Image (spheres, rainbow, N blue to C red):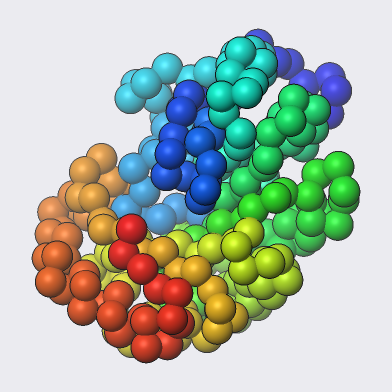
Length: 251
């Protein structure tokens, strides 16, 4: 880990955010690399290793550290996202450095790597202060609709049901104000039936944050042609989720 180069492009740095880390003004670092292929993903350059990322320039870890040093006393948190940060070898290094500088750490994960998540949680030096887990659709549908047909897990619905449940249980052990679950309201992937199944992963005191789908720059270009739910439709879905998990909310 200590031999990792700090001067190579590693991720997208968002210098200041007031929405990504609940209760904190933070910076965010979106690392390259992911193990699933959500068709509606708009971080294509972070997900596909052979793509040319032209949305905005990638920052180095050295630039991230310089920013965190400069903003000490102004920012109080760092969000490590992706991609999937649990895959990235820079994640432990970033956590340790940010913590040395006095920052609280939030990890965003897709929930498919419970073993790697547990390694972080069980290590006092690496344990995140806040964890957010994405839930894309009904767990059984990940195997065909989320992971992509080139994945070794394509068609293996039992695998995703297992790992998503394991990750959710790890996160549920955190205090309720130090965790959340997130779902993008993608038509065709998130319906009332899906919400009912997804809710079974969550503790009853979960914070379940929903967001509207953006039909632009999607990994699967056909999703650019899908119209988002109307505001009324989105509210109806979230109201239904509230009947199952009181902490459901449209962010």
